[in-house]
Image (cartoon, rainbow, N blue to C red; front, side, top):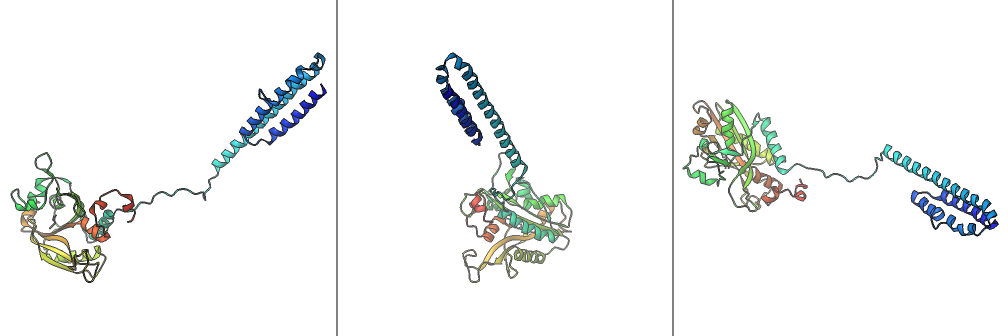
Length: 344
Ligand code: PHE
């Protein structure tokens, strides 16, 4: 009897110590199993109790029960305290925000080379009073060819391998020159517009050819527009674009059915002094196709060629972007390869 009471006392002390020391719900649960579980320390005392005489059982029995209840109460109150502190910690964490904590940085974007060069071009021309025009990429035969003085049987149609659509008379535009006619029809002179955008040619793809690329088109129509206006504008433009005031230009005759006279403009190579692979060791880079707008084209656009004259120019924006950034493969420029695009 005495031993049992001593055991009960020791059990109360041990369990209360163990419960108090637990600092997590998991640890507390282990302690509960250790003392109150089916094979726990309280259960271990049962054989001692049943070995007692009936009389001793009357005192020892309630003592055992009391011991169990006390341990259970200690356990419950500790459990509640642990829950409260965990909640409080969570609440505190959500109230305060650690601004110094490390966070993964989002990927920084950058402008696509096309966007960058298009911006330089539009900034330059809008400062001169040009407006930015747009034209459809799915075009009619009229705007892409006929109105530009290229009738159906004209051999110049062969210069541009065309993607024809299944609907007769519709095609993917082969040049941005279609914008010339749209702008003439929409406005009255003076008209000064530029336009950049995609054009399509039915060509096999390799490092320097793609079935789609971009062009820049420009046009100025007024009463006394001359070839020297065109040349002066182009010179200033190429110097701005190539970011070099010393760039010289060279004029050669060129044939485009929609201009007369037609010229081609080369720029002196800004990348070398004695010839390099970019200028194919000639010191000149072919840049622009241009000329004075053919009277037939003005007529097709609804403008009187007796009263007005204009100049037009066009060039491969894609080629220019590749030149400017030293991109050797057109497919990279048109691909969504992030590692490549990140460089710009
Ligand atoms: N559209 C012509 C081409 O694609 C370029 C050009 C435009 C030439 C305007 C003269 C005037 O080659």
